[in-house]
Image 1 (cartoon, rainbow, N blue to C red):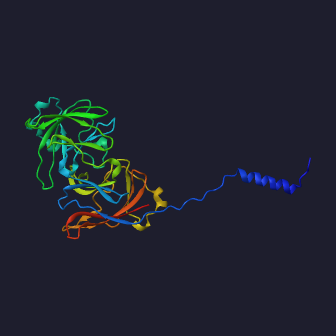
Image 2 (tube, one colour):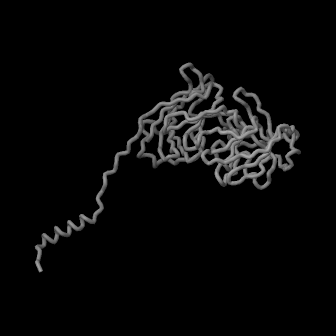
Image 3 (cartoon, rainbow, N blue to C red):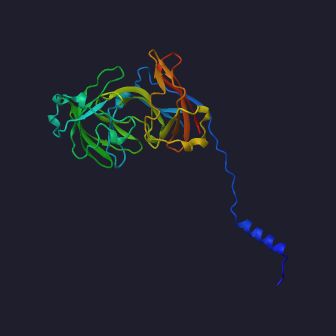
Length: 327
């Protein structure tokens, strides 16, 4: 047996340990995107709802806000029904199940008992709520068009829901236009939509994985007033599909960096960006330049965003302009 010197044993031990230790790999430096400017046109009357993809820096859809009245949750277990809050729509449960018995007489006291959808997009805070156990008839106030003209009322009875469709009945309060339809669910989209005007289902929003933010009017409720005051505002809402955001009014836009994301508490509140990034001063709108927003998009990417304008080069309002950057 050959005896090795002590130094040889030590060298052999070091080589053995070195082969067992996991090598450290270099951590790549996080690369942020460039600061990009963007704008969309809603028209000075705010008649358009506009959908925007931050990833593609592009408008991916738009529609007249008046083309739809109610939307239907599309998930297999979904049953919620939402109102088109861009028209200042409201609903009231009549407590009746006999569809033909509901008439103009049931509108007495509507204003004092009307309900609205929460602007945060919470499905358990809708005007219609969980209708499945009673199939009551609702009176729907269709709100106003972009010119402030009233759109009338309908009565609505939701009859059934399954994993792939809804069945419902609706008519004018005098019984005209009595229609029963089946609304088909498609999980490619957040919602399926119905127009009381055309009596048909229609597509409104783009596919849910193709956009991040929408510019639209919506109903905001001032709960500090007595009684609470629902008010139509113009702003920016999040995509309800896996999209979160937070507002930062303490850090400058340039100083918000990827490494600091851990200090933010993100929320699925659709109105996190909302309407108050601008202020009406009596004659026009000014931008609240200290309001910055961090958006966690559905594909897992983070963006920071701040607004820089609300008017186009011709001085017409309804043209939000902003800068944003992928973090």
